[in-house]
Image (spheres, helix red, strand yellow):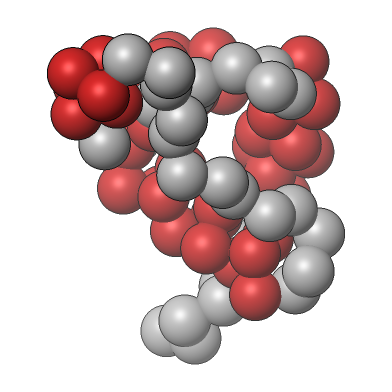
Length: 73
């Protein structure tokens, strides 16, 4: 199986839509998997494909409180 194979493109579209509504917010693969209806590993793989395709860019979490930043990393 090809690394970038997408078996259900409609789920990828739903993932991109879910990500668009989350701009500026901390998101998790678990939360996205529930919204889109695919497992967490697939969400992570699709996000990696979107990053490699330069469609999205993920940023590390940032918190003014250093203790909170540790929670989100």
